Length: 147
Image (cartoon, rainbow, N blue to C red):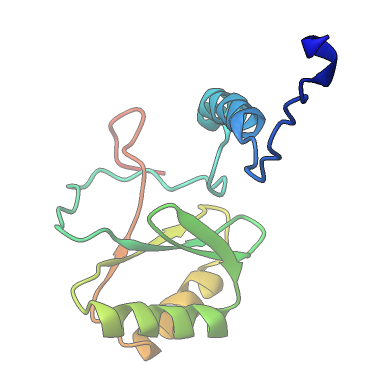
């Protein structure tokens, strides 16, 4: 008889959120991104002229402005790369140089782009306050220095 009069214990409701499934999903996503990261190709495909020259050494990471074969302009500082107009490039370069005046500025121009587009870019960089512009090239394949 005592068993029928015993109170049943009620479980106390818990308002805590179970985060274990979220952690599992995040770990799976982390593994997927780690595997996929090397296959992601960042950058613009540019056919650089081939010239024999010495590499430039700098302590600061360079600001690279690219002109692709279609005449589109891109600006990149480190891993960030974005399409820009000449006016936007001028504003961004000015902002970067205001923060760090020692930042080297480099131009990557496709060998098939018109000379005028590269000159327009360099004029915009000069108006942004860039004292020296470096030109990026590939080393020659056959060693003659001609592109």
